[in-house]
Picture 1 (cartoon, each protein chain N blue to C red):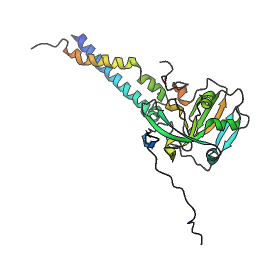
Picture 2: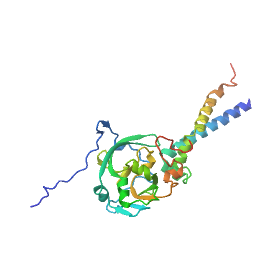
Picture 3: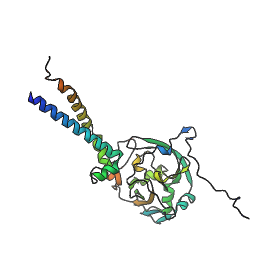
Amino acid sequence: MSWLRLSKSIIHWLLAAVIVFLIITGLGITEHRIVGDLSFGLLNKALAHKIHTMPALWISLLALLLLHIFLPFIGRKKN
Amino acid sequence: MDNGADETTELEGVEIREYEGEDLSSIDEFIENSIKGPQYVDISEYRLRITGLVENPQSYTYDEVIGGHQNYKKVVTLDCVEGWSVKILWEGVLVKDLLLEAVPLPDAKVVIFHAHDGYTTSLPLDYIVDNDILMAYKMNGVTIPPERGFPFELVAESKWGYKWIKWVTEIELSDDENYRGYWESGGYSNSGDLDKSFFEYY
């Protein structure tokens, strides 16, 4: 079941990426001076706020989280 | 011998937390989120300039702004796009009183506010006049501290917090209705209306 292992791995990394992205954009709102400087002005407060409040991002987080929780039960061998 | 005993020195009071039956927030409840951190304006050098599409450009000292105009106070809540809000008793002068002395030209449609740190924002001239918008020098009965916008903060009621410009140094009248201030250029709504989203595409 290598496809299952590959799917789990992709979901884990995507979930991690989305979480990190949400943290960075959240900090881009509350700590906008620091994040703005570190990103050379690319991620300003308004842009961070727009990205952070995108419904698609939160739906993705929820979907990935559910898959992350329930995918390990698929294909589990019974003793 | 004159030991100054006859003179009275007015000391700064403690902020009030209740006004005419309304509970007020503390001035410590603001979250500092300005673009360059708190600004410490040298009041001896300070001038408030009224420029742009006006017949008589003006330049006021701090005392001329406060002492030369009718003072008003009202309780207004500031709502920040970050999700926090503060209800404060503001005391200040009407922006329209300052503008009337400069005499806006017929083409003037927009008021652009400039701050000591380079921050800018704009509001329609009609909004400023029709809503008796204040430029405050006191909050909760005490002089606005440097961290909160000394010497003047705009009380842009019914607008999101990014329209409440602090450390105001210049009021410019313009005919550019598409002018966008600092955060508005970054994507926040140009109208800044509190009853609408602070993003224009939602």
